[in-house]
Length: 404
Image 1 (cartoon, rainbow, N blue to C red):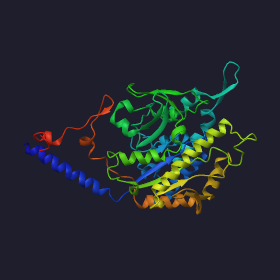
Image 2: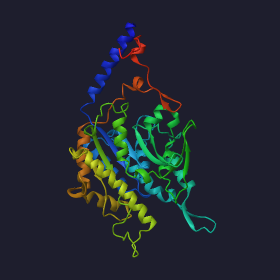
Image 3: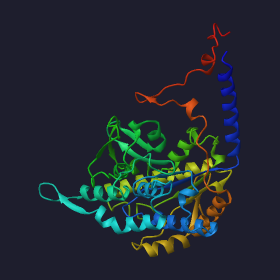
Image 4: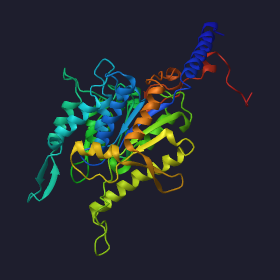
């Protein structure tokens, strides 16, 4: 028996135990941002207030949202915000503050979503692909021209789309990108993929950086307009990045909505008793988002303060300044464990403030990388995880014979 190898294994186990014990008392913090529309005023207002409160409570004007969250997820316009908040400037800091991210999206909104008439008789309306591609590429590149990829983020990132080639959801994640270049994509293309709304954009085809994985994407909002459940599931099953998480009791979750897509003030059913196709699509997307909220409300029913959902219900204005004021003053709504909702006495602003208080009290995000990375997960081989060799085999033990 190789004594040095056995000693190394013993100390590796002790190191794992020590690292895991150091993060047992700190919960993993998840930030999730809904898709919905092209403006993102609701989530943008929430993000600005969130970062302002973090800076106020820490007394540090350089504090950022990414300092206090362990993973950020987003769909559609929410994915763009998520990517901007965690894009690495090369020194481990985010490229954008919440204010600068929202300001850029607001200023470039008309350029990104410029409508053009297409078709033989120019009767069909679509957004210009060239315009949005140009803005996204400029936004998610560094000053030296380097185009950022999923690996170039200061915190784990999760962004869903729908892949027409596999007829199923495709979730871009930093965790997969780190494992293999076959799952590393340029950030701007990932944001483009999750924003490819059918009828307004053509399906968007993108390749991984090593050109081994291809995805023909349409809007992630069709399957995960509210990506919170995907983020929770990812954290629960990703022991490499989140070794101390065993259940929802180990999580803090902040989910930011973008307002209902279907206007509750308008009739959804026509005089003939039928729904229009656009109204039906909006109802389905709203229903998916609310279903996710309901399920998470059930999952966190014993510790409801660990899951906070910020959503606007009566805000119809198109001005950013007015949206921010109205959103923060509007009373919050909470899903009940077995169906239905209740109107809270706290406003959305007060709920964000209380959440930030707990964030700051628990300290900055400092979960160590999993010490099990090298021994539990081997690099991808031909697109698959290869199992690690048996430690018994390495130590020279004989294989089991008839269970003995």
